[in-house]
Length: 252
Image 1: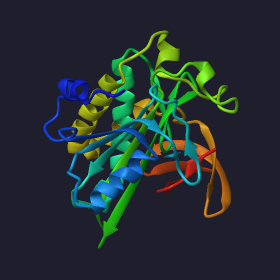
Image 2: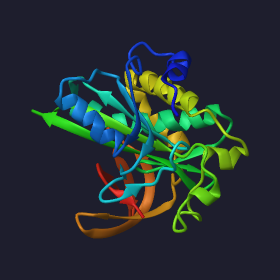
Image 3: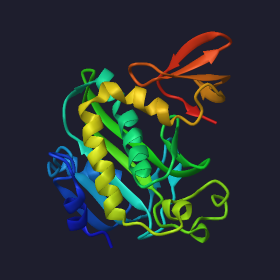
Image 4: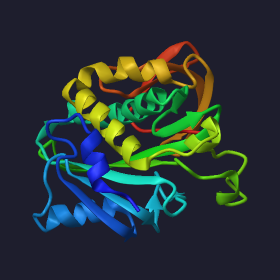
């Protein structure tokens, strides 16, 4: 069970996480966050968190596995009008925040464009941001964060064992999920207040900087060298000596 008082005790924020909605079981924290927004029951910086997420979502049609009462499934509601240029940096800031929280616990995380959290080459978490845009301004965004905390290797489905890990597997001992929630949220508020710095920080954690990558864009297959991020947080790929900018791609 998640104890929200432990999250609150460890928070070092002014806005983010000051309101927490906890559920024992949810289909998806992102879905619940949007429901709260539609009902007018949300608040900027609110955390939606659950012990058991039954239908966690990844990018596209992918799903996110979570072991009940072992992983961290949370969403943070952004309820603030923001320009699209700044809004594109929010997922980057979220990734940086999770990496900083893991690093705070003594590990060396890496980030894979656009939303994968890696430790020692294995996936430990991911981020899914969903937004509502009106007149080229972000009106609301839900930042979904999934992180494997206390899963053992035996908890993962057979098809994930070779590519998945958890904080507990990497450190050899269990961790307080509430503390991770608080640390991630604290870093996220700081990074949210300085969005323009996010690409520069993200690059420090990048798992594939100056390495060959392949991806699809507009149903066409590309291969190139990942060169970094531009000021909007978009991927920059060197394609045969020419740097091309891609706002939304998924690396193979």
